[in-house]
Length: 119
Picture 1 (tube, rainbow, N blue to C red):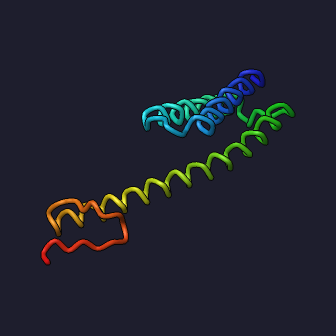
Picture 2 (tube, rainbow, N blue to C red):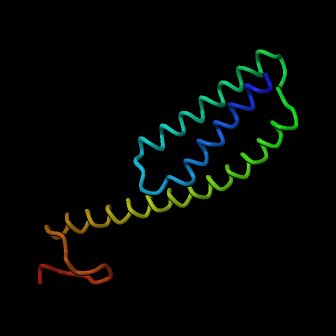
C-alpha cells in the first residue's frame, strides 16, 4: 500500500511539474488534461486510504507531500498570473468591441488616443 501511494504521489508530482513548466503556450485542453490526471491520482490515493481504513503515511510519503505542497504554491501563483492576464485580455476585447459598436469601424489609432469619426 505504501509503495502504491508513493507511486501515485510521484505521478501527481510529475503532472504538477508539467503544469508549471509547460503552461506557457499550451492549449486549454492540454492543461485541463493534466489537471484531470492529477485529480485521478488524488482519487486513487483516497481509495487506498479508505481501503486501509486510515491515512497511509510514512516518512517517504511525508517528504513527497512536502515537495508537492511547495510545487502547489508555485502553481497557484502561476495560475493566478495567467488568470490576471486573461482577465486583462477580456477587458481589452470588451473595450475594443464597445469602440466598434460606437464608431462602426476599429480605430487604427493606438490606445489612449480618442478618435471621433463624426467630426
